[in-house]
Length: 120
Image 1 (cartoon, helix red, strand yellow):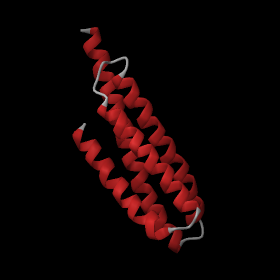
Image 2: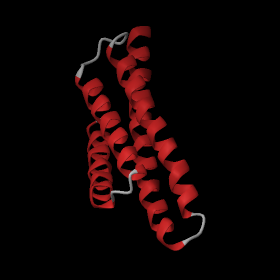
Image 3: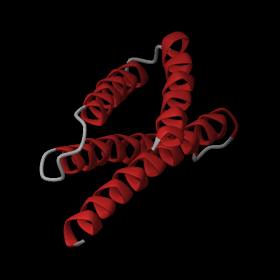
């Protein structure tokens, strides 16, 4: 019983991490719109990028905790690591001011994150 409850908490933590990541990616889209229309948009988008990256790292941590000690499947770890790679590329493209790739990649990341959330 205690093992099943612990495994359930790990899955819940993983789902929460994915939801947080999805929310932060969505808020990045909102702040991108503000970037075009408001003076504080650049600051908000910059801070949001750091929060989104931290959420991606939290997703990796949650996936590893659900897998290793909990005996869960390895697939979520690969998905989380893939998101972290995409987040890293996204940050680099944003800093380099390459919107032609940065924006579609952000849309792709949001869609994949929603899909991951729906699967959990």
